[in-house]
Image (cartoon, rainbow, N blue to C red; front, side, top):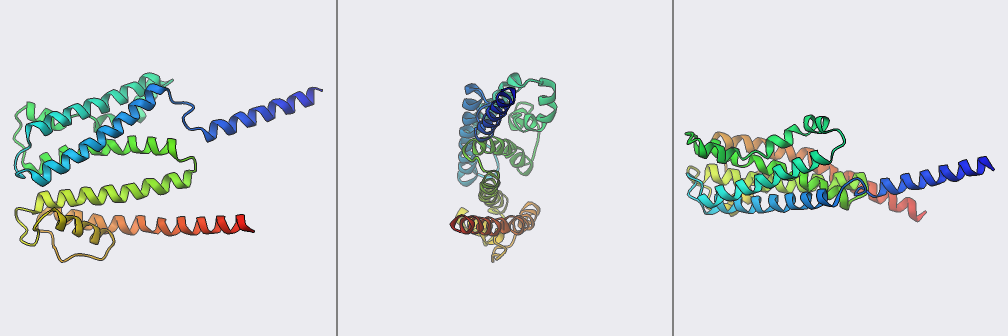
Length: 246
């Protein structure tokens, strides 16, 4: 009788463990989920605003509306961080392990503007892109909720990384090269240049600035690392479907 109870408890525990594993939202509060979605939305808004500022701006100064919007978005990122820390069982450990994400949420561009620091446009642009890295954390959290399979989670994370990094590279290349590169006639050229380089095909537009040359090296390196993942994913799916059919 006791053995039956033990087996029943074990089965119940196993079943509950299975449920917990298949439900990644179990340990998240509604407030945490709401803040993660809000942080992801803020990151998308930031990406759109950065694109608009670079494509339509004068490539020398940042507009006031962009500075104000980046400040609001960084505040959202900071709120998300402290909400998660408040819900963490060990707050000190959470702070240490996630300190890097806190640094990414600081509105550095606004601080530089308030201090009237004399920064070149090159450095100011790199600083303004820092909060975008924080968006990847929110995106990963949302993907973790949506995808239960770990391999699919990594697969979609890699796809989004390639697409976003290529797009950001096009923005950076356009901002740094448009005033000095005679072969760059618009953002469409920069986007085409970025995709040709990430696929390791290459383009007829050659970088002139130092930042442009660095991005030119990074893009094909990313492509060589990321694109084999597509092959692995397709092979695994084919093998799994074939095994299921047999």
